[in-house]
Image (cartoon, rainbow, N blue to C red; front, side, top):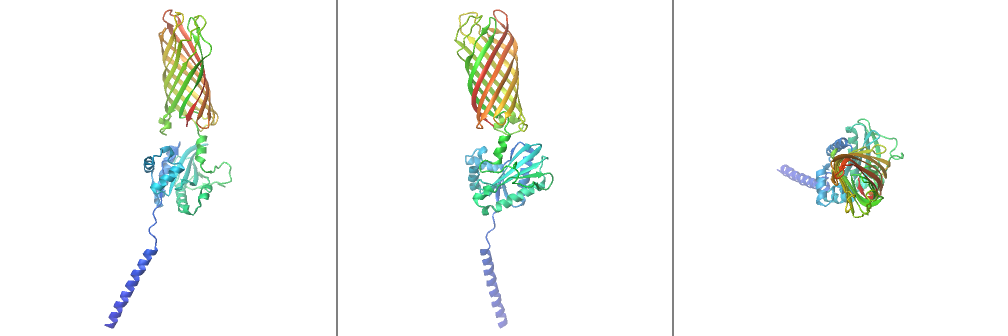
Length: 440
């Protein structure tokens, strides 16, 4: 009986001891570490297939490493709820705000481009404060990146996120040097030195490598152009001859492409354009013996445009195919029967060639078009034809200021003067200087 009581007391002692020990262990061991959450919004750039493939592989690899990804839709919805425009949702202040609300540990962004026959993907990792703590560049000749480089990149991302708290804020940005990696196979093969070559750009605060790259690939035709300015005009035509010296006018030009709203292949290069030129102070002299300033002259055009751009080529040539409808009229209010009013409506097609003479500031334009099915009105009747030519220089300053200097000519032939039946040859020339706003 005594032995049995001893065993019961011993068992009770060890039971209490074990219970307190387990409780102490549970109290001493910290709670389960929360999985890291990283936003991976849609990558931007021109290499759509490579961007999509790389983003999908990065997300898949991060998930395998225990990182919870936040995709484009979730990140975009959070930005809209906070009144942040999609174009600004990756700016440092926006990343800081969204990271606080979504409990993000980082944001991974990517930008694809083509350089010297290679596909280039630039990856950046920003911490919750919007600072760049990792900057990598992958190069490949194949549209799909191999698993090796992606796995290595994901490992670096996880490692950088894990060590972020030990990196002083002042050194996190300074230490984010761009490393260029050639992807020729499944392995990462770094260059001899990631810091010694002069052609390896570094991240310097807000002026990141992406902004430098964006400047390099700006084409000779902006996505949006709105400009206005002064025109000087000359007219020669009809019989009896209507001629004039230089007379001034006001000219407005506008153009935009869908690429300013949607970066979708083919669709982004479809656009619309327009021109309006109104003149004043016009005096006629010559055979018409007319000297009358009570004259209205108007020119306008509206058109659909398709752009074929080669921004990576040295002079960034771009070809614009334009199809539209326009009108040119010169209405003279006079009692002199020899002073004839003329008007022409016409559908037209034109081909423009734009070249970058000095990237990204100075551009050259040459253009030629055909006016078909021209119909006359006022004192002109019958169908006819015509042509137009145009040339100009454009200067872009401060990234968005547009200054243009140009010349255009419209000639109409084939119609007839109603009263005399004499065939029409009417020429309108214009020299213009304009200033406005353009957006890439």
